[in-house]
Image (cartoon, rainbow, N blue to C red; front, top):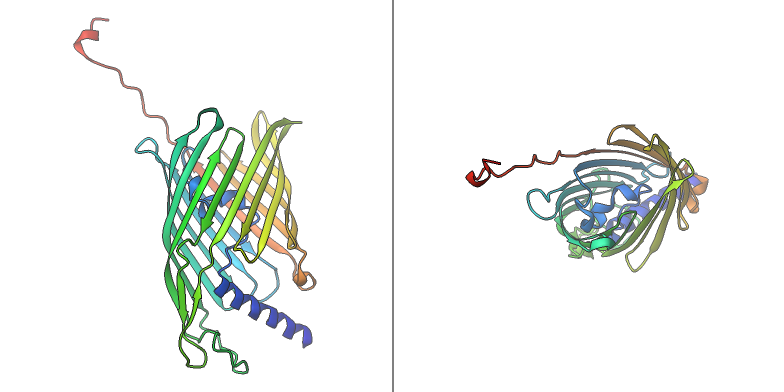
Length: 319
């Protein structure tokens, strides 16, 4: 009974802090979700790419976080300079629900041998709500707790700079620039309680080394903070090649004071990649959690270059 009470207490506190501190999602495969936290990355890769990620955190713990992500980005340089993308993600933890929808645009600046710098902005909306099953605790006389009809929709703004080189990338960005205020109905019938969405700041980077044995090796890093909490993700993957084509990868990942995990990926067919990660929980929930599972699929379609046209001016017809 005591263990169950402790678990419910932890999840209740997580739900409240998550809803009102507005912590962004945590993903092990953040390399495939860069656009949603840094719009400068939008469309810098050639073609049209779609990525979907699902994360089940702290498996077997009722009310634990679950995240779903869908990103679609396209390089639009054949029509106009830049890239366009659409990001959607859903987060659920305890009784709280969060949905974000963003339209992203990035303008590319060619820096010669250094690479391409993308300056991007994301504009959209975010919604927050408490699950209909939410019943405010009647024993806690706290007017800051939300009522059972809590929900809100607000403006959301992101900005980012993203540098893409031949074998490396680096980015600096901020999410929730609008710091939208969320108003909820008080549990005890008092004036509505107000909360502000916290800005988050990101630094990311990665480097890939080719011809390491029969394959390639990469390193990826992401630092995130809301100026209250701070975390760093580090991972490294080894890519297996066959006839010069990457077939898949295996790697390790670490998140400060939170998790250690393994990563596996497979290129099922041309331009299609799927992957899985398993994180071992290192925080206070390690005794009751069976770890975290994450799955992703990604497909890219590359448009053929338009055919070259030749002049038919009469001056050249005789040649």
